[in-house]
Image (cartoon, rainbow, N blue to C red; front, top):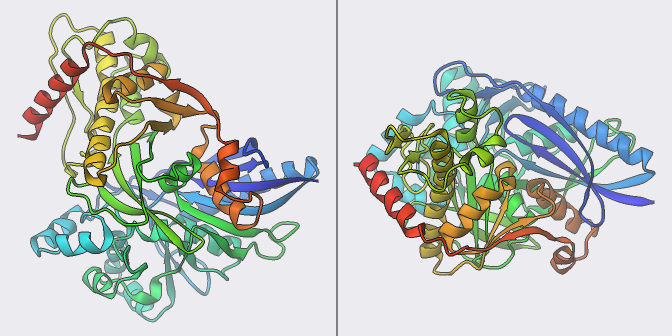
Length: 492
């Protein structure tokens, strides 16, 4: 009988379930989109019940496929959009407010108040995070402040908080298990990444009752099983990790200094820093990469909020390309950027600037500027913002990175990957299995149930698709100098 692991990849716009075999290959997948709500400017919400329904539908699809293949499902792993916040009634399981999504900025003013109260250093030292409405704790406070009755119920222990992993596990286990893993907990502004516990001082500052919070577990252990009657058989749940940490594990960035970059709507770059947290001096996030067998691995993370979204903007708003894939051929119609620099701050600037109100800019336009120059400048902007982050991480960690492993939709753009290699002067490695987030969750789940023996076995599975090597581009320094000069103009 064939054996499989299911990975649930709970994303920002859709949910997927993927069936992986013993060789780490995706055998079958099912994907369902769900609704995005934008009730006010800067607000982004999801319907948690719709997230559950779409997840359940995809799970049933892949379980049925496994049955047709005469296979056995050994476990489920979950990876999820991080920071998105759900509150629900512990007795009825009904949500008390729509999920507030990680992109939501409604607590920006509150975060400014916390900074004026000189809380930032203390919070950063405990959590590795800056004060920002990006993280879950501020979202919990907003929901509780929106209705005094909710706060009273939370203090009475009647409500539960969870990121999407917690919500799905609660639903999958029929309300038996209220858990999250260390990676998701480390993104809440409430979790001390040194003591590995919810922090009473942080809870007091953000006015979050302890009774709301889930039990924190490791990223690779049996945490529960699906409720009786939900599927034909009960299935263990044994892997949990936030999406970017899962991708780091899926890329097998297991050694200190190993780094990966995911090119999606934004770019999310994480560097493995080993068994000790590195507190960034360059406004990177210090976070937990994973916990396995009682051992914690830490990481530095930097986010570029706009990457693939910039290509979508060129397609949908400027309409200079008909599809996202067309940007590569358009950029190849010119030899360089023609002096054009694009600053891709369409929804604020992430690390290392953390300027949520920043806007984008296009500089250096002349009458000779062509569509190809704009397309090339856009690809360079994605690579340059990633370069900025990776070099800052290298400074913080004091460890040179050997190469850059890449994944995400835009990693299939060969020109972008070559530009990235040239600008970093390092090899850029793209894997055969680009579902690295999902396979990371599968790896964590599979290790916990003995599907794979150890990390050495995983290394025998992982294969590269293509390696991009630096071409010794003569205009590298020119591109970087132009970028630095224009960025300084914007920052001042």
